[in-house]
Amino acid sequence: MNLFSKIQLAPKDAIFGVSEAYAADTAPDKVNLGVGVYYTDEGKVPLLKAVYAAEQELIAKKSPRAYVAAEGPNPYNTAVQNLLFGADSPLLKEGRVATVECLGGTGALRVGADFIKTYVIDNAPAAISNPTWDNHRGVFESAHFEVIDYGYYDPKTRGVDFALMTSALESFPKNTTVILHTCCHNPTGADLNEEQWKKIISICKTRELIPFLDIAYQGFADGIEEDGKVVRLFAESGLLFFVASSFSKSFSLYGERVGGLCVVTQSKDEANRVLSQLKRIIRTNYSNPPTHGAAIVATVLNSPQLRKMWEEELAEMRNRIKSMRHALKEKLIEAGVKQDFSFIENQRGMFSYSGLSAEQVERLAKEDHIYAIATGRICMAALNTKNLDKVAKAIAKVIVSK
Ligand SMILES: Cc1ncc(COP(=O)(O)O)c(C=O)c1O
Image (cartoon, helix red, strand yellow):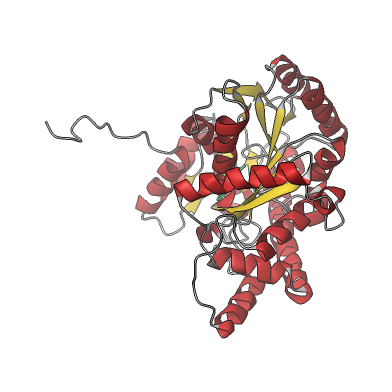
């Protein structure tokens, strides 16, 4: 017996497990649809031109790598706020939004979860959609929340089961933290429309729920402004709420860990008090954030020329995914699939709930070296003009010969 002999092996993360199986496969034409990353048509993670140009500017400045404040640099935090709420937001003008740089969207969720649990309410659960991004449960459980869920997806319509969602929200106890994907729902690709969001806002008000918006894919559905619309609706509603945002996908800065947490409060004074406690949470976890990723994002967003370049590149990523959605639907028809796959085109963002069963997913890997998540989630951004035919034919095969 020693200190660690009783430690059990942690269960494998579903997504990393798929990536491991893919890495171990030696087939030259293998495809990994299990990832949560945007790939170019050449199958590469892009280095955006706007990011590269910003890095050149930063290198030329020869800035020293001093510590930054726990909340992150002001030009970055202001850029985060403007992107989410709009530069002319009354909330921002009134100083009612406390903002901290965080380690990606995950870090923002965790800092927000710790803040709620420690300083706001310690006896109410957190609610996540069913299904959701795997880590939502883990993050909130690690912050000592009881995690409950609300029904979200209707496999029959391949869209949102809004009645199920609203009836769950209406049954939650007061002060439940409700995690809401503002756009490009991961893993289903099924989003609410504006009317439905208004109804969610109204339920949050009457049931006194705490909305926690998760926006990890701004710009991947319809555009930066359009995808920020849900945040604006909450801002106009008078509710107090949280927003966790991420630049991992929109800037292709996955490894830099750049995100932000915004807390909408009632007054400037309240925002200052909230900020002071957020800083304490950060200080006692990792002291202060890294500098490079936030400097890139701030340089791009605060330069009209680089921002334009970034918006064009983001539009290119968005449009490539849309064209892959369309092409997959067409190729499946060509491959003899009778089942209606038009939902693939209607779903938004990086992912699609394909409706493939765990068995069919297993067959894709065994027979055709195509890897996906057992739930049937496929990453549309991992499709390209070279692997599309192979993927469509393999999917058609497992569907037709069930
Ligand atoms: C819904 C959702 N929220 C948050 C995140 C976390 O993003 P990040 O990599 O910036 O931590 C992801 C990443 O896949 C996500 O899908």
